[in-house]
Image 1 (cartoon, rainbow, N blue to C red):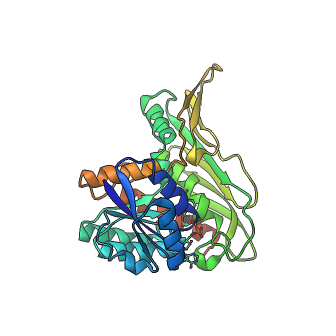
Image 2 (cartoon, rainbow, N blue to C red):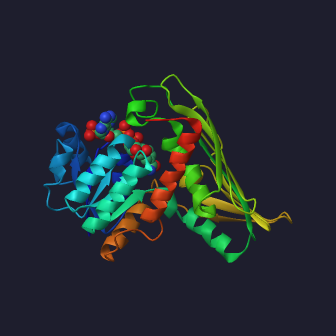
Length: 321
Ligand SMILES: NC(=O)c1ccc[n+]([C@@H]2O[C@H](COP(=O)([O-])OP(=O)(O)OC[C@H]3O[C@@H](n4cnc5c(N)ncnc54)[C@H](OP(=O)(O)O)[C@@H]3O)[C@@H](O)[C@H]2O)c1
């Protein structure tokens, strides 16, 4: 049984706690909020034993195997370091931190303390993602020529919320653009060139960003994200002998279709009754049971490489936090 703590019980932490209830060998033990009442309500709702009115107090729990960090982006670095220093395994929300320098420091500390650390990039563990990789590996679509992915929704405009608030690390790129970038990195690795352009809003964060990545041999990735419109949210892999389309919304999808040039196609469906966070929870549980210090599916090197890509795009569009 992996005993979990949650740090910062906001919107995503509720979904995580709901999915945790579906993982047989995991249990929510403690929750920490900046507000004790909020922590107590959350603990009561999901059956946790302990509730704390500060994040620091969570470290004194003494019954935790892992902490899920769900604070706004700007808190990830500090909160991860705090848990690692206390020797507690960490699953930290995406983006892992605000830049690659912070991520490198988090990884260094985890390795030095020999404590498990993983970025909560839940899409990596989705059955659709695993299936797409399996299809590519099988050679069914032939040589990969390029990828395409988008993530867009109409975000309610509220400068107090983290999405548009620059001091909380707001902006489409770090919040949702990370997913299309993840898709390109997963399939194609590191690009040789990145071009990007953004539309900035009143709060000086990117509200829409388009990215074109090119790779040796002419392979390409066309990626975009926006807070301004509900886009299709589909991910594609174009191969010489076929195309994989991960159905909308691809980052949390339940199905993908492979289309072949002769007009035939096959669809693979993976039903579930959860949000889809149980897959990353199961990965952490399995790693901890196996005494692994990082996930083999999404390693710490993968996390820093992805953050490097985000840094490069930010450099291109001129977004400084
Ligand atoms: N994997 C996914 O599917 C997914 C989806 C959405 C978000 N996320 C990630 O999860 C993180 C949290 O997102 P969210 O949508 O859950 O945000 P949220 O609803 O605003 O919750 C964040 C929580 O962080 C705490 N917090 C600490 N410092 C804060 C500050 N200065 N301002 C506001 N809140 C602060 C608050 O909890 P207390 O005050 O109770 O401590 C708050 O409830 C983000 O990094 C985001 O990228 C991931």
